[in-house]
Image (cartoon, rainbow, N blue to C red; front, side, top):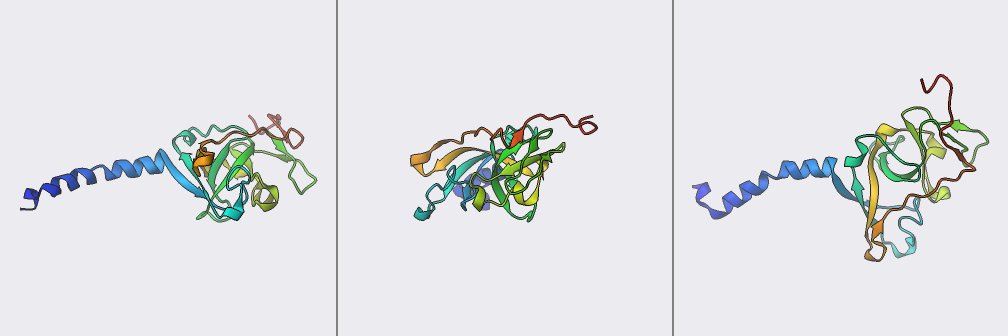
Length: 175
């Protein structure tokens, strides 16, 4: 009797696609609302307007764990794993970094990265918590979707060569 209803078949065939949609959002592409000031001016450049940027996340491209310096990513916060943060990768394994507020050089170990917000004084990032495991990175931020006036790709930013030395060899660590 239930199958005689013309809507039942439509609903059942639509429900069959729910697992596919869930898989796509979990492992493929999705969107995120960026809040906070840590990535200004890349995201939310005018916090007085109370608008938040909406961005496209590419989760599929993180499965190979290949990232570029200057790329914007989302990751689980190493301080609170329930929170997802958005930062820019400054250094990768084998690099060294001069933290902003410390007089030391930090080597980036294998399987780790150094991430920072674009607005250094409003960002809780590797300057606070150190290097992060690359496994915490869950998406690359590829496009700004909203507001329409800023629609377009999220550009990589050149790293500051005064602070980041790339591909420094560390004996015993790279073997």
